Length: 179
Image 1 (cartoon, rainbow, N blue to C red):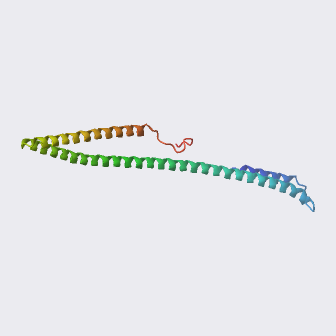
Image 2: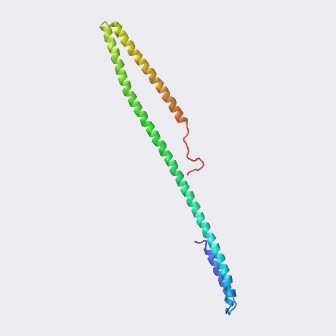
Image 3: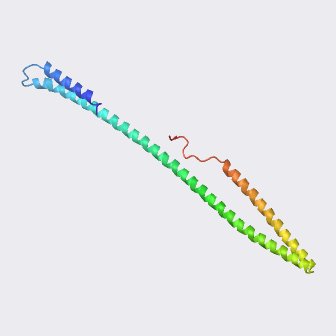
């Protein structure tokens, strides 16, 4: 509002000076000699105030747009972070589930192989040599194949994790910087 104060003071000074410079008898057309310059000055001041008001409004509008753009960018960045965090937690949860399931399966397979080996040893002791040797060989082959597959899956998992950690996080809009 203080932007308009110099214009108002100038208008008052011009009005007072015109009134002081006017001839004493303002009869008939004498008022027109005073009214026309005052009307012109008032019109120019109104246009000047209008231009100042429009510029002030545009400045405020630009400031609000910039503020909203910053806020929108913050929301997008926070949403991307939250999405990344949820994905990370889901991946961690899946990995824990896989570990637990694998541990249960390993226990069951180990129990089955141990049972087969025990049965093979028992058959060897009870003079069923051929069947005992076959059963021990089958148990050993099963255990070897299972361990080989377990190593291959771990190597594949390590390669996938290495590929995942090498990628840089995705930016929504790298041109707009947030504070």
